[in-house]
Length: 217
Image (cartoon, rainbow, N blue to C red; front, top):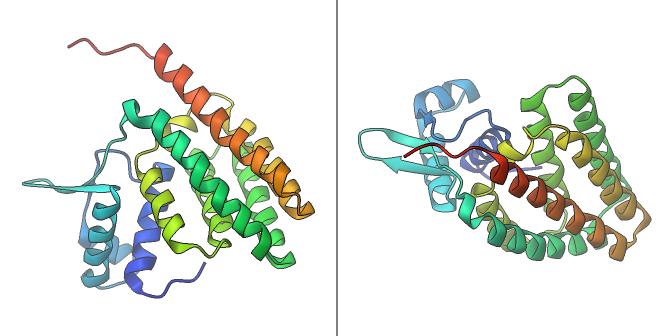
């Protein structure tokens, strides 16, 4: 993936970090630390924070600074339905734009995902799950639709889903079905595999949240 500006690069780095759990929900993000880690000045980091605040990934709280936004469990069903609608649109467009090299790259990301699962490297598993979807959807060349998908992702608890026992392995098998259909140029199968993948994640999350004991008031 290529970036037009430094702030876009920083914003993408932080999105992946938030969705992978490297920057936990509710944790504080410091401009100076991010800038130092990426060997950049403060300016693109500050602009990236503004981008992510507009998308809903972070909140700017008085006396606390910038913190990673929590997810809204009550809105997750609606978000899932919107994800299926918009991500299906991106997969359809990507299918018509993909080159053999793009398919090869998608397969490489998926192999890395499976290796991370085998090593039980949870942060890397979550990061590679993000890269899989992000790379696939970037091939659609529909930046406005992708922007709205990224806004939905800000509110979706990928970090919780991938902590569910056995979920990463099941996600890998679902990814493989998507890749197989894309490589074959089978749009109907690709869409069915994508929708099944998103729905399966929601069903497992819903069951997990219902079983989780509620904290006493």
